[in-house]
Length: 156
Picture 1 (spheres, helix red, strand yellow):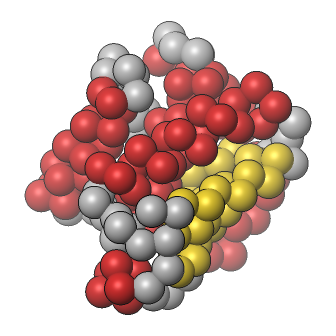
Picture 2 (picture 1 turned 30 degrees about the vertical axis):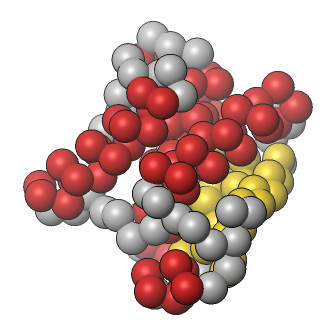
């Protein structure tokens, strides 16, 4: 299994957390039993950029914590081929605020958002109650593996 995580750090925080974020993504891919060579990009950015992306792609003119942009390949193609999964954008200021509200470290919040974004790239969603329960269970399993079992997502 070859998993490639390219981290683009527009905010200047990746030096201390790049390995943690890569581990969070790879752990998520393994937990989801991905066997092919897969790659994705994780963008650490500011509120203005995430707000523009949220407005342009989701019609919501406000910052958010994490956005995922799947490459368009369906699940069977992902498993059969080594493919590019897509992009994840994380707003570092939103993550900082959520970490402070939740009482845990920024590194833990960034790992949570990396896991969350990766699950979205793999087709998980949380719009419906059943889907949310499935996604939260997968997310919790990864966080436990990472030693972050006390970290819970902030509802924004």
